[in-house]
Length: 125
Image 1: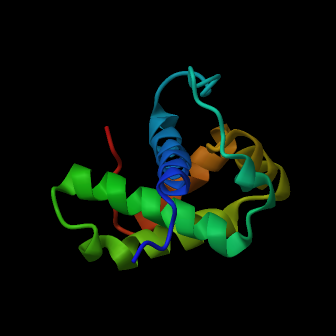
Image 2 (image 1 turned 135 degrees about the vertical axis):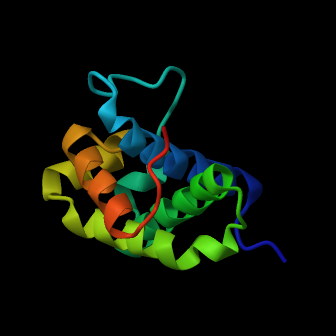
Image 3 (image 1 turned 30 degrees about the vertical axis):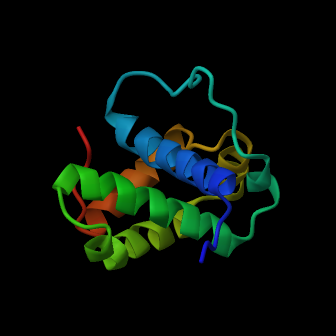
C-alpha cells in the first residue's frame, strides 16, 4: 500500500534534503544564493506545521543514514528531535523563507546546526 504518490514522495524528499544540506553548508562561505535547477515544491507555501516537521525529519533520516551508514529506522528519535527543535526555533521570516525557497536561509541554518548538536547528530562535512 502506498501512502504517498511517487511524484509527491520525490518532491518531499528533495525539499527535505535541500533543507538539511543547506543547514549543513552553513560553515561554508557565503549564503546559499541559488540551487541551480531546483524548483521548490509549491505545497510548502500551505503545508501544515506537522507536514513541515515531517519533511525535515525525513530529510534528516535519509541524510544521516547515509552519513552514519545505519538504518533510517534507527534515526527516528534523533531526527524527530532535530526537526522539532529546528522548526520550533525559526522565527516567522525564517519560516516564510523556507516555505518560499524549500531550504533554510543563513540564520535558519545556524539554528539547524545547533539542533543537530543538541540532538547528538553529526554534522555533514
